[in-house]
Amino acid sequence: MKSNNSTLNSQLLTLNPLEPIIKSIITQQGAISVAAFMTLVLQHPEYGYYTKGNPIGRTGDFITSPEISQLFGEIVGVWCVDAWKRLGEPERFALLELGAGSGIMMSDIIRVTQKVSGFTNGMNVFILESNQILRGKQKENISIQYSYLESLSEFLSDMPLIIVTNEFFDNMPIRQFEKTFHGWEERMVDVENDMLVFKLRPISSVEQNLIPVEMRDSVPGTVFEFSPVSQTIMKEASEIIVKNKGAMLVIDYGYKETIDCSTLQAISKHEGASILDNPGLVDVSAHVDFRALARVSESFGAKVQFLCIQKEFLENFGISLRADRLKLHVDEKQKHQIDIALNRLLSDDEMGSTFKVLSLAS
Image 1: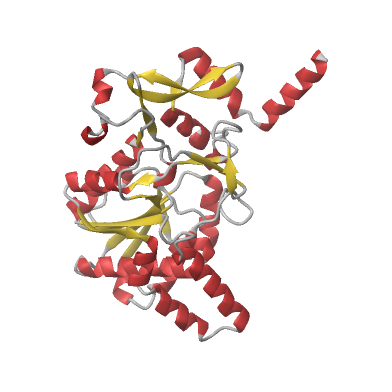
Image 2 (image 1 turned 180 degrees about the horizontal axis):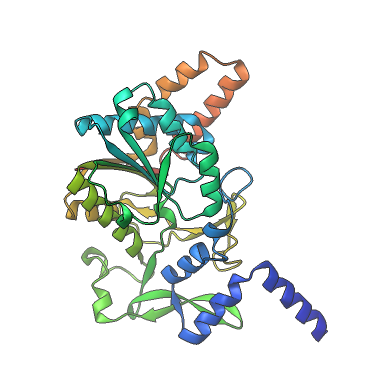
């Protein structure tokens, strides 16, 4: 019996080599924050979810808007041209995508903007991407020359900068705080009976300042989340677009108003999964606090142009008109496919209101 258990444990370690690494860290250092846990499961250099495989597409764990329809990337391209025009149509400028996935959205942007010669001729494309497999996909899908950045701090040019990103900030690590009958405590990941579990720890008086003033007297059970990494990225992006002149478009699932519950979730094969089971093998994410992103940007001099639901953004920039024009040149089956994709992008029951869009400019 002991031999069988040993064999089973060996098989589990082979299937998921990251779990014992996380348990070892916790055993040696004590419980870790949700942010530290997310960093390990998503970005571990060998076994992290976003460093070892291709999670995007119908055969992956989730599918993003650019994979649903070319219309999505084309409308983002329309926004890019609009931003470029508002910047005075600079002869040289940088277009940067954060987390470009398979490269489909950038490919659609490039295709739809080709007829705007000043935009196309002046465009210098950059991509921030950590996943080597996705970098390979990007090389297959993006037809023009571009450069990679490891971080925003590597962007040293004085060119005006236009930044676009879709489903990037939802995977940034978050810290979680919960109001208990003893006050605010931080949600941690610990080991108990050789299993990963959530636990709470009291926070210091200095950490109490992380809780927004309007939430400090909340009832027990209230949860507050914030992403230090997201705030750092928004700080760096805002400083560049204010200094160089530029604009930024952020699209993600998230919320515009304050919420008081946990948004942490795990996805595997397009379905919900356990957050703590199979670390590194499932996608762990959290809903994006768009108000927090906007506040950081404004504090560094950027201006919010709009913050709206995805449906409003896509419709206001002409997605229905573009769909109608596409349907003029296709058969009935393809028309039906366009309508299905459009419904998924716009419907309140699908992505239309769950996803939000933030536009910033200098």
